[in-house]
Image 1 (cartoon, rainbow, N blue to C red):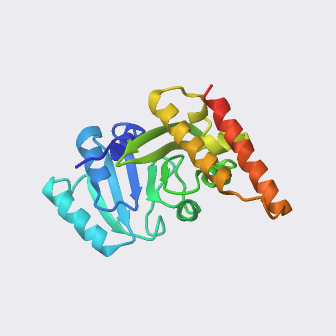
Image 2: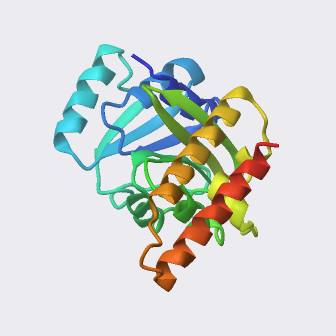
Length: 219
């Protein structure tokens, strides 16, 4: 019932926290947190269908007092403070950035399905990446980030691979870096420069530079 991805997200959240789960789907994260970490949660989703399915699950576990369900577009209908932990997982970067425009929390947990470089780059003037984890679940690599309020400078390599991930040497991190390496090597091989267009050559050089940075992080 509780996926590896969900459990890794929960591992970033301290016990007894007040949690706002944006895009809760069926509220499984909230149920896990309420049972295992004694958290009080607001589980929100823009979909009425998801809220109804979440309601069934919450009732099944008799957690109506610990989990409040709210239909909301992001954080627009949710009162929250800097002490809350906001979780946004399973969405694209553009959606996550849009939601965070209305966020007051000091701590946020993010898992984006797209464009991790852009996510880190756009948040670096407001948040510091405190920790990152990689989990391989259902044949997909997921990157989970814990961020705190506070501006910090990050290098291009930090933003590309992750400031924490690039320095770690665990088995799953090495596998993830090799996955990234294979991804960019394929992109490089598929860029044709037969036309000798400047933009095409520049793109090939850019991808070659990315490959080198990933290779260096594997050393």
